[in-house]
Length: 146
Image 1 (cartoon, one colour):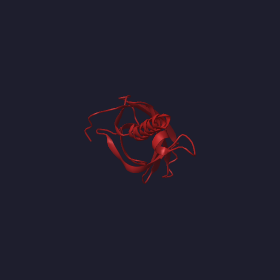
Image 2 (cartoon, one colour):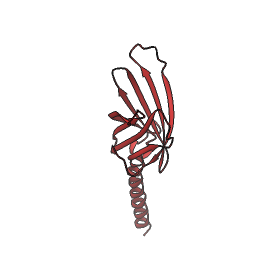
Image 3 (cartoon, rainbow, N blue to C red):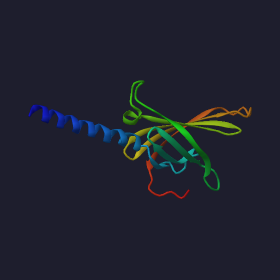
Image 4 (tube, rainbow, N blue to C red):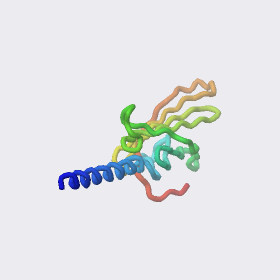
């Protein structure tokens, strides 16, 4: 009887961990909008995760309409070197390269419907412009127009 109870408990724990594994990676999934309507940086992000493969599409604050920064394959990071990406995903890093800049986004979970994005921009065109960093809080957004 004790063995049957132990096996049942072990099965429940295993199923619970498997559900959490998918849920952690999936928490990044979705369309996100910057809460600062006046930002001069990234205004929207779309994250699509398939296991540990992640695509990130971003739009920047351009006039008169938002500009498509692009869609890139991104890297997802665990909490430690021996961490399971699916269960301990903590951040996604997406890097965009154009003719004149390299833009790196570091995306971190802040809650079920919140992410924090650090945006690092380094110019490669010899213009002398300073590299800079911007930060933004993003909320999950159900509808997107892009």
